Amino acid sequence: MIQRIVYFPSLRKLLLRAGSNSASSKIGTNNCFASQPSPLRSHSSDDEYADVDWDSLGFGLMTTDYMYITKCCEGQNFGQGQLSRYGNIELSPSAGVLNYGQGLFEGTKAYRKENGGLLLFRPEENAIRMKIGAERMCMASPSIDNFVDALKQTVLANKRWVPPPGKGSLYLRPLLLGTGPVLGLAPAPQYTFLIFASPVRNYFKEGSAPLNLYVEENFDRASSRGTGNVKTISNYAPVLMAQIQAKKRGFSDVLYLDSATKKNLEEVSSCNIFIAKGKCISTPATNGTILSGITRKSVIEIARDHGYQVEERVVNVDELIEADEVFCTGTAVGVAPVGSITYQDKRMEYITGSGTICQELNNTISGIQTGTIEDKKGWIVEVD
Ligand SMILES: Cc1ncc(COP(=O)(O)O)c(C=O)c1O
Image (cartoon, rainbow, N blue to C red; front, side, top):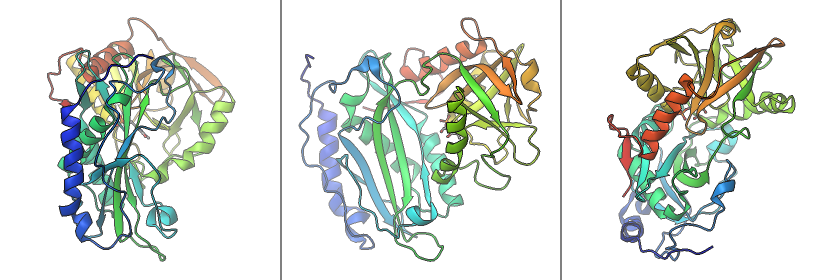
Protein backbone atom coordinates (compact mmCIF):
# COMPACT_ATOMS: atom_id res chain seq x y z
CA MET A 1 0.00 0.00 0.00
CA ILE A 2 1.45 3.37 -1.01
CA GLN A 3 1.19 5.85 1.82
CA ARG A 4 1.57 9.60 1.60
CA ILE A 5 3.81 11.10 4.26
CA VAL A 6 2.23 14.16 5.79
CA TYR A 7 3.04 16.29 8.79
CA PHE A 8 0.38 17.16 11.35
CA PRO A 9 1.48 20.25 13.27
CA SER A 10 -1.56 20.10 15.54
CA LEU A 11 -0.71 16.57 16.63
CA ARG A 12 2.85 17.52 17.49
CA LYS A 13 1.61 20.50 19.52
CA LEU A 14 -0.84 18.28 21.30
CA LEU A 15 1.68 15.60 22.19
CA LEU A 16 4.06 18.21 23.55
CA ARG A 17 1.21 19.66 25.58
CA ALA A 18 0.35 16.19 26.90
CA GLY A 19 3.94 15.65 27.95
CA SER A 20 4.41 18.99 29.66
CA ASN A 21 1.06 18.95 31.43
CA SER A 22 1.86 15.80 33.26
CA ALA A 23 4.28 17.60 35.54
CA SER A 24 1.83 20.21 36.75
CA SER A 25 -1.44 18.26 36.71
CA LYS A 26 -3.10 16.70 39.74
CA ILE A 27 -1.55 13.43 38.69
CA GLY A 28 1.84 14.67 39.76
CA THR A 29 0.65 15.91 43.12
CA ASN A 30 -1.62 13.09 44.26
CA ASN A 31 -0.03 10.09 45.79
CA CYS A 32 -3.15 7.96 46.08
CA PHE A 33 -2.14 5.89 43.06
CA ALA A 34 0.97 3.94 42.34
CA SER A 35 1.86 4.30 38.69
CA GLN A 36 1.10 6.29 35.54
CA PRO A 37 1.77 5.30 31.96
CA SER A 38 4.73 7.34 30.75
CA PRO A 39 3.74 10.50 28.88
CA LEU A 40 4.46 10.66 25.18
CA ARG A 41 7.47 12.62 24.07
CA SER A 42 7.52 11.77 20.40
CA HIS A 43 5.46 10.24 17.65
CA SER A 44 6.83 8.45 14.66
CA SER A 45 3.80 7.54 12.54
CA ASP A 46 2.97 10.51 10.38
CA ASP A 47 1.44 8.44 7.57
CA GLU A 48 -1.89 9.79 6.43
CA TYR A 49 -3.57 6.41 6.93
CA ALA A 50 -2.78 3.31 8.96
CA ASP A 51 -2.24 0.19 6.88
CA VAL A 52 -5.80 -1.12 7.14
CA ASP A 53 -8.03 -2.82 4.59
CA TRP A 54 -10.80 -0.24 5.03
CA ASP A 55 -13.24 -2.26 2.92
CA SER A 56 -13.29 -5.14 5.37
CA LEU A 57 -13.90 -3.16 8.58
CA GLY A 58 -16.54 -4.52 10.91
CA PHE A 59 -17.04 -3.76 14.59
CA GLY A 60 -14.13 -5.74 16.00
CA LEU A 61 -11.45 -4.19 18.17
CA MET A 62 -8.51 -2.90 16.14
CA THR A 63 -6.13 -1.25 18.56
CA THR A 64 -4.68 2.12 17.58
CA ASP A 65 -1.54 4.03 18.53
CA TYR A 66 -2.58 6.02 21.58
CA MET A 67 -4.97 6.19 24.49
CA TYR A 68 -5.75 9.03 26.85
CA ILE A 69 -5.56 8.52 30.59
CA THR A 70 -5.98 10.55 33.76
CA LYS A 71 -6.64 9.69 37.38
CA CYS A 72 -8.04 11.40 40.43
CA CYS A 73 -8.72 10.64 44.05
CA GLU A 74 -12.20 10.56 45.56
CA GLY A 75 -13.33 14.06 46.46
CA GLN A 76 -10.92 15.70 44.00
CA ASN A 77 -11.27 16.82 40.38
CA PHE A 78 -9.72 15.21 37.33
CA GLY A 79 -6.85 17.27 35.97
CA GLN A 80 -5.56 17.35 32.43
CA GLY A 81 -4.54 13.85 31.43
CA GLN A 82 -2.03 12.57 28.97
CA LEU A 83 -1.70 10.47 25.86
CA SER A 84 0.26 7.28 26.13
CA ARG A 85 0.85 4.35 23.83
CA TYR A 86 -2.18 2.06 23.73
CA GLY A 87 -1.50 -0.79 26.15
CA ASN A 88 -2.49 -2.66 29.25
CA ILE A 89 -3.27 -0.80 32.44
CA GLU A 90 -2.26 -1.98 35.90
CA LEU A 91 -5.06 -2.60 38.40
CA SER A 92 -5.09 -3.59 42.04
CA PRO A 93 -6.96 -6.88 42.56
CA SER A 94 -9.06 -4.92 45.04
CA ALA A 95 -10.00 -2.18 42.55
CA GLY A 96 -13.63 -1.07 43.01
CA VAL A 97 -14.40 -1.76 39.38
CA LEU A 98 -13.22 -5.38 39.61
CA ASN A 99 -14.96 -6.16 42.87
CA TYR A 100 -18.16 -4.15 42.74
CA GLY A 101 -18.55 -3.12 39.10
CA GLN A 102 -18.05 0.59 39.75
CA GLY A 103 -17.55 1.62 36.15
CA LEU A 104 -19.13 3.55 33.30
CA PHE A 105 -18.46 3.63 29.61
CA GLU A 106 -19.39 5.87 26.72
CA GLY A 107 -19.30 5.51 22.96
CA THR A 108 -18.94 8.15 20.29
CA LYS A 109 -17.39 8.38 16.84
CA ALA A 110 -15.05 10.62 14.87
CA TYR A 111 -15.62 11.01 11.12
CA ARG A 112 -13.29 12.14 8.35
CA LYS A 113 -14.66 14.71 5.90
CA GLU A 114 -13.84 14.72 2.19
CA ASN A 115 -11.47 17.65 2.82
CA GLY A 116 -9.67 15.66 5.53
CA GLY A 117 -11.23 17.49 8.50
CA LEU A 118 -12.20 15.41 11.52
CA LEU A 119 -15.60 15.72 13.17
CA LEU A 120 -17.19 14.66 16.44
CA PHE A 121 -20.97 14.44 16.91
CA ARG A 122 -22.41 16.04 20.07
CA PRO A 123 -19.50 14.93 22.30
CA GLU A 124 -20.69 17.13 25.17
CA GLU A 125 -23.82 14.95 25.36
CA ASN A 126 -21.61 11.95 26.15
CA ALA A 127 -19.80 14.05 28.75
CA ILE A 128 -23.08 15.04 30.39
CA ARG A 129 -24.33 11.45 30.37
CA MET A 130 -21.10 10.27 31.99
CA LYS A 131 -21.41 12.98 34.64
CA ILE A 132 -24.99 12.00 35.47
CA GLY A 133 -24.01 8.32 35.50
CA ALA A 134 -21.05 9.05 37.77
CA GLU A 135 -23.35 10.74 40.30
CA ARG A 136 -25.59 7.67 40.33
CA MET A 137 -22.61 5.35 40.74
CA CYS A 138 -20.93 7.57 43.41
CA MET A 139 -17.88 8.26 41.25
CA ALA A 140 -15.73 11.28 40.48
CA SER A 141 -16.10 12.38 36.84
CA PRO A 142 -14.27 14.63 34.37
CA SER A 143 -15.71 18.06 33.59
CA ILE A 144 -17.53 18.50 30.28
CA ASP A 145 -14.58 20.50 28.91
CA ASN A 146 -12.03 17.92 30.06
CA PHE A 147 -14.06 15.14 28.51
CA VAL A 148 -14.42 16.85 25.13
CA ASP A 149 -10.79 17.97 25.10
CA ALA A 150 -9.68 14.41 25.89
CA LEU A 151 -11.76 13.09 22.98
CA LYS A 152 -10.17 15.60 20.62
CA GLN A 153 -6.68 14.68 21.80
CA THR A 154 -7.42 10.98 21.32
CA VAL A 155 -8.75 11.55 17.80
CA LEU A 156 -5.80 13.70 16.74
CA ALA A 157 -3.26 11.28 18.15
CA ASN A 158 -4.95 8.43 16.26
CA LYS A 159 -5.74 10.44 13.15
CA ARG A 160 -4.31 7.87 10.76
CA TRP A 161 -6.85 5.34 12.10
CA VAL A 162 -9.89 7.45 11.16
CA PRO A 163 -11.24 5.66 8.08
CA PRO A 164 -11.49 7.46 4.73
CA PRO A 165 -14.86 9.17 4.06
CA GLY A 166 -17.57 6.60 3.43
CA LYS A 167 -15.55 3.72 4.87
CA GLY A 168 -16.52 3.98 8.55
CA SER A 169 -15.49 5.98 11.58
CA LEU A 170 -13.15 5.97 14.55
CA TYR A 171 -15.12 4.61 17.50
CA LEU A 172 -14.08 6.24 20.77
CA ARG A 173 -14.59 4.43 24.03
CA PRO A 174 -14.34 6.64 27.13
CA LEU A 175 -14.17 4.62 30.36
CA LEU A 176 -14.59 5.82 33.93
CA LEU A 177 -13.40 3.22 36.40
CA GLY A 178 -13.19 2.94 40.16
CA THR A 179 -9.55 1.86 40.24
CA GLY A 180 -8.75 2.54 43.90
CA PRO A 181 -8.61 -0.45 46.27
CA VAL A 182 -11.60 -1.43 48.45
CA LEU A 183 -12.55 -4.46 50.47
CA GLY A 184 -15.87 -3.65 52.09
CA LEU A 185 -18.59 -2.35 49.76
CA ALA A 186 -17.81 1.36 49.33
CA PRO A 187 -16.91 3.84 46.60
CA ALA A 188 -13.34 3.39 45.37
CA PRO A 189 -10.82 5.93 46.71
CA GLN A 190 -9.42 6.61 43.21
CA TYR A 191 -10.85 6.90 39.68
CA THR A 192 -9.37 6.52 36.22
CA PHE A 193 -10.73 8.21 33.10
CA LEU A 194 -9.42 6.60 29.95
CA ILE A 195 -10.25 6.80 26.25
CA PHE A 196 -9.23 4.27 23.64
CA ALA A 197 -10.20 4.06 19.99
CA SER A 198 -10.86 1.58 17.22
CA PRO A 199 -11.79 2.08 13.57
CA VAL A 200 -15.22 0.55 12.87
CA ARG A 201 -17.93 0.22 10.28
CA ASN A 202 -21.12 -1.84 10.63
CA TYR A 203 -22.06 -2.99 14.12
CA PHE A 204 -24.24 -5.92 13.12
CA LYS A 205 -23.02 -8.77 10.95
CA GLU A 206 -26.06 -8.02 8.77
CA GLY A 207 -24.19 -4.86 7.65
CA SER A 208 -26.87 -2.40 6.59
CA ALA A 209 -29.39 -5.21 5.94
CA PRO A 210 -32.56 -5.24 8.10
CA LEU A 211 -32.31 -6.71 11.60
CA ASN A 212 -34.40 -9.58 12.91
CA LEU A 213 -35.21 -9.02 16.58
CA TYR A 214 -36.49 -11.41 19.21
CA VAL A 215 -38.70 -10.17 22.06
CA GLU A 216 -37.14 -11.50 25.24
CA GLU A 217 -39.50 -12.55 28.03
CA ASN A 218 -37.28 -14.68 30.25
CA PHE A 219 -34.64 -12.08 31.04
CA ASP A 220 -35.05 -8.43 32.04
CA ARG A 221 -32.52 -5.78 31.12
CA ALA A 222 -33.45 -3.28 33.82
CA SER A 223 -35.85 -2.71 36.68
CA SER A 224 -37.63 0.42 37.83
CA ARG A 225 -35.45 2.63 40.04
CA GLY A 226 -32.43 0.55 39.01
CA THR A 227 -29.64 1.68 36.68
CA GLY A 228 -31.16 0.98 33.25
CA ASN A 229 -30.75 4.66 32.32
CA VAL A 230 -27.07 4.69 33.24
CA LYS A 231 -24.31 3.49 30.94
CA THR A 232 -22.76 1.42 33.69
CA ILE A 233 -20.65 -1.56 32.72
CA SER A 234 -22.75 -3.66 35.08
CA ASN A 235 -25.79 -3.43 32.75
CA TYR A 236 -24.11 -5.23 29.90
CA ALA A 237 -22.77 -8.63 31.01
CA PRO A 238 -26.29 -9.62 32.19
CA VAL A 239 -27.68 -9.25 28.63
CA LEU A 240 -25.09 -11.54 27.07
CA MET A 241 -26.93 -14.79 27.75
CA ALA A 242 -30.17 -13.66 26.10
CA GLN A 243 -28.21 -12.22 23.19
CA ILE A 244 -26.19 -15.39 22.64
CA GLN A 245 -29.31 -17.54 22.78
CA ALA A 246 -31.12 -15.28 20.30
CA LYS A 247 -28.13 -15.24 17.92
CA LYS A 248 -27.96 -19.04 18.04
CA ARG A 249 -31.56 -19.05 16.83
CA GLY A 250 -30.65 -16.77 13.92
CA PHE A 251 -31.84 -13.45 15.36
CA SER A 252 -29.75 -10.28 15.21
CA ASP A 253 -30.46 -9.16 18.78
CA VAL A 254 -32.95 -9.04 21.65
CA LEU A 255 -35.73 -6.53 22.28
CA TYR A 256 -36.52 -6.11 25.99
CA LEU A 257 -39.87 -5.47 27.64
CA ASP A 258 -40.40 -3.64 30.92
CA SER A 259 -39.75 -5.92 33.87
CA ALA A 260 -42.83 -4.85 35.83
CA THR A 261 -45.63 -5.70 33.36
CA LYS A 262 -43.90 -7.41 30.42
CA LYS A 263 -46.24 -5.44 28.19
CA ASN A 264 -44.20 -2.44 27.08
CA LEU A 265 -41.20 -2.03 24.81
CA GLU A 266 -37.97 -0.85 26.37
CA GLU A 267 -34.91 -1.14 24.14
CA VAL A 268 -32.52 -3.51 22.38
CA SER A 269 -29.27 -4.69 24.09
CA SER A 270 -27.30 -1.70 22.87
CA CYS A 271 -29.69 0.61 21.03
CA ASN A 272 -33.04 2.38 21.32
CA ILE A 273 -36.16 1.40 19.37
CA PHE A 274 -38.71 3.35 17.31
CA ILE A 275 -41.92 2.25 15.59
CA ALA A 276 -43.59 4.17 12.76
CA LYS A 277 -47.20 4.13 11.58
CA GLY A 278 -48.11 6.57 8.84
CA LYS A 279 -46.58 9.94 9.74
CA CYS A 280 -46.43 9.11 13.44
CA ILE A 281 -43.24 7.83 15.05
CA SER A 282 -43.23 6.49 18.61
CA THR A 283 -40.45 5.51 20.96
CA PRO A 284 -40.49 4.38 24.60
CA ALA A 285 -40.18 7.33 26.98
CA THR A 286 -37.00 7.53 29.03
CA ASN A 287 -38.47 6.75 32.44
CA GLY A 288 -35.34 5.50 34.18
CA THR A 289 -35.12 1.99 32.76
CA ILE A 290 -33.81 2.75 29.26
CA LEU A 291 -30.71 4.57 28.13
CA SER A 292 -31.30 8.09 26.93
CA GLY A 293 -29.54 7.66 23.60
CA ILE A 294 -27.86 10.62 21.93
CA THR A 295 -28.83 9.20 18.54
CA ARG A 296 -32.40 8.75 19.83
CA LYS A 297 -32.56 12.39 20.95
CA SER A 298 -31.10 13.60 17.64
CA VAL A 299 -33.40 11.42 15.50
CA ILE A 300 -36.44 12.71 17.40
CA GLU A 301 -35.41 16.29 16.61
CA ILE A 302 -34.68 15.52 12.95
CA ALA A 303 -37.97 13.65 12.51
CA ARG A 304 -39.93 16.59 13.97
CA ASP A 305 -38.05 18.95 11.62
CA HIS A 306 -39.09 16.67 8.74
CA GLY A 307 -42.76 17.02 9.69
CA TYR A 308 -43.32 13.75 11.54
CA GLN A 309 -45.28 13.57 14.74
CA VAL A 310 -42.96 12.01 17.32
CA GLU A 311 -44.30 10.60 20.55
CA GLU A 312 -42.17 9.59 23.54
CA ARG A 313 -44.54 7.43 25.54
CA VAL A 314 -45.35 3.95 26.78
CA VAL A 315 -45.32 1.71 23.67
CA ASN A 316 -47.27 -1.50 24.14
CA VAL A 317 -45.78 -4.64 22.62
CA ASP A 318 -49.06 -5.23 20.75
CA GLU A 319 -48.39 -2.08 18.73
CA LEU A 320 -45.70 -4.06 16.92
CA ILE A 321 -48.49 -5.81 15.02
CA GLU A 322 -49.79 -2.59 13.45
CA ALA A 323 -46.46 -0.80 12.84
CA ASP A 324 -45.35 -0.07 9.26
CA GLU A 325 -41.71 0.34 10.17
CA VAL A 326 -39.44 -0.37 13.12
CA PHE A 327 -35.90 0.92 13.49
CA CYS A 328 -33.13 1.06 16.08
CA THR A 329 -30.87 3.98 16.94
CA GLY A 330 -27.45 4.16 18.55
CA THR A 331 -23.93 5.43 18.03
CA ALA A 332 -22.69 1.99 17.07
CA VAL A 333 -25.70 0.94 14.96
CA GLY A 334 -26.68 4.31 13.44
CA VAL A 335 -30.34 4.26 12.37
CA ALA A 336 -30.82 0.58 11.57
CA PRO A 337 -33.89 -0.89 9.87
CA VAL A 338 -35.71 -3.79 11.52
CA GLY A 339 -37.11 -6.32 9.04
CA SER A 340 -38.86 -8.58 11.52
CA ILE A 341 -39.68 -9.01 15.19
CA THR A 342 -40.58 -12.36 16.70
CA TYR A 343 -42.81 -12.23 19.78
CA GLN A 344 -44.26 -15.37 21.37
CA ASP A 345 -43.49 -17.33 18.21
CA LYS A 346 -45.30 -14.84 15.98
CA ARG A 347 -43.10 -13.16 13.40
CA MET A 348 -44.06 -9.65 12.33
CA GLU A 349 -42.51 -8.09 9.26
CA TYR A 350 -41.84 -4.46 8.42
CA ILE A 351 -41.21 -2.27 5.41
CA THR A 352 -37.53 -1.60 4.80
CA GLY A 353 -35.42 -0.13 2.02
CA SER A 354 -35.81 2.89 -0.23
CA GLY A 355 -38.41 5.50 0.59
CA THR A 356 -38.71 4.49 4.24
CA ILE A 357 -38.72 6.88 7.18
CA CYS A 358 -35.77 4.95 8.58
CA GLN A 359 -33.72 5.59 5.48
CA GLU A 360 -34.69 9.26 5.38
CA LEU A 361 -33.66 9.79 9.00
CA ASN A 362 -30.49 7.76 8.59
CA ASN A 363 -29.46 9.75 5.53
CA THR A 364 -29.95 13.01 7.38
CA ILE A 365 -28.19 12.13 10.62
CA SER A 366 -25.28 10.39 8.92
CA GLY A 367 -24.98 13.32 6.48
CA ILE A 368 -24.67 15.72 9.41
CA GLN A 369 -22.23 13.43 11.21
CA THR A 370 -19.95 13.09 8.20
CA GLY A 371 -20.16 16.71 7.11
CA THR A 372 -22.01 16.16 3.82
CA ILE A 373 -25.16 17.87 5.16
CA GLU A 374 -24.84 21.31 6.70
CA ASP A 375 -25.07 21.22 10.49
CA LYS A 376 -27.63 23.88 11.37
CA LYS A 377 -27.96 22.68 14.95
CA GLY A 378 -24.47 23.13 16.33
CA TRP A 379 -24.09 19.38 16.81
CA ILE A 380 -20.73 19.03 15.09
CA VAL A 381 -17.42 19.71 16.80
CA GLU A 382 -14.41 20.09 14.54
CA VAL A 383 -11.35 18.38 15.96
CA ASP A 384 -8.53 20.38 14.45
C1 LIG B 1 -28.48 0.06 26.15
C2 LIG B 1 -28.26 1.11 25.13
N1 LIG B 1 -29.31 1.77 24.64
C3 LIG B 1 -29.17 2.73 23.71
C4 LIG B 1 -27.93 3.09 23.23
C5 LIG B 1 -27.81 4.18 22.21
O1 LIG B 1 -27.23 5.32 22.78
P1 LIG B 1 -26.45 6.37 21.88
O2 LIG B 1 -27.39 6.78 20.80
O3 LIG B 1 -26.12 7.47 22.80
O4 LIG B 1 -25.28 5.66 21.35
C6 LIG B 1 -26.82 2.41 23.69
C7 LIG B 1 -25.49 2.73 23.17
O5 LIG B 1 -24.75 3.39 23.78
C8 LIG B 1 -26.96 1.41 24.68
O6 LIG B 1 -25.91 0.75 25.17
